[in-house]
Amino acid sequence: MIQVETSVVKRKATEQLRFHRGERLLGSSLVERLKTRHVMVIGLGGVGSWAAEMLVRTGVGRVSLVDFDKVCVTNTNRQLHARKGTIGKHKAAVMADRLLAINPVADVDPRIAFYNQESSDELLALKPDLVLDAIDNLTAKCHLLAQCKNREIPVISSMGAAARLDPTQVRQADLAQTHTDPMARSIRKILRKLYGIESGISCVYSTEPPNDPQSTQTPFDDVCVCPAPDGEFRDLHTCDHRNVVLGSVGFVTAAFGMTMVAGAVDHFRSEIKSLSLS
Image (cartoon, rainbow, N blue to C red; front, side, top):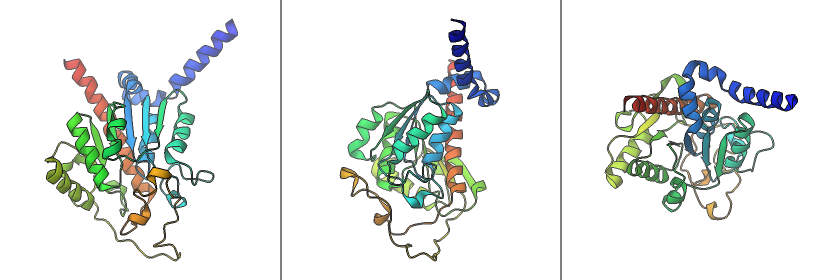
């Protein structure tokens, strides 16, 4: 009996100590709130993979992972799930295994799906408390942002992280206040034209102008070597569908993901303040 009780105490201590260093900075009330929050990450690439991991390392209790794609060897320089043994596997599944190895008691829900108008209702029916948008496809991205705004789901959206070299120029602001970023400019135009949305969307962007891609010494500059998506996803957004493949580096894409999670934590801190004032 004493041995069983000792085992339970050790297990509970281990679970608590996983996030002890964060709790020393964030405070117990915020850490407890993070355990009850559900964040959905849509897009698990160079930005979303880092955001997903940092959510779990910060103590968020429930994380939904949405991505239709498989790990490609070209993801290795910037995406957390890309390593020996994972090439060709679904990003959402690989990332879920990784997150559960970090926090085995987290509720991690991988969804092998492409977010678009057709899948929107099913995915957002999961009722996330916050969405982190790391989608590359502009049509899908703008539809998601409009849906989140219409459904009053808080969202933080990543703008263009590729073609940048300076992580110190990453910022968070309302979409209406962004500048320099061509993706943000395009998104503002689409949201205004199709959805009548001018502002009210938090986003992470860079004040660094994008750099043009350079030719390399490999014969694969214009060849897609990534594994084809399965079945219904086969003809969706892949590198074969891009006009140009931009260069990217992990120390910038990771900075985007980290900044998104900092914004998420600040959002949940604000929830606590609002409750205390009500």
